[in-house]
Length: 92
Image 1: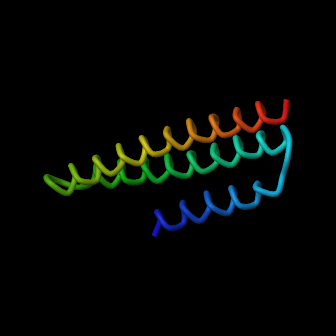
Image 2: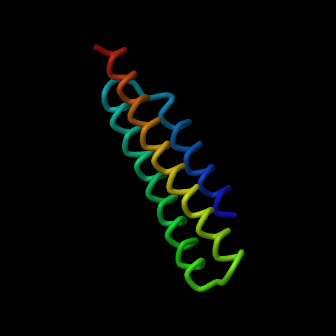
């Protein structure tokens, strides 16, 4: 369920920004992707906490999921920054 919520948040932000122009749009992309990445990191923290309360294979699985979510958050931040930089380069 969190995956779908995260995807919906990301998509709504990108679609809303499609109509914007200029550096304000680039700033909005940065803010939106930062918010999305923060949500992913929060989910990763919850998975990590659940892993701390689990044992054996379940704990390992939850920790792996948390690591994957942290990686996804970092990739989201990087992609947002790259997109914003490209938007600024096209407006200058």
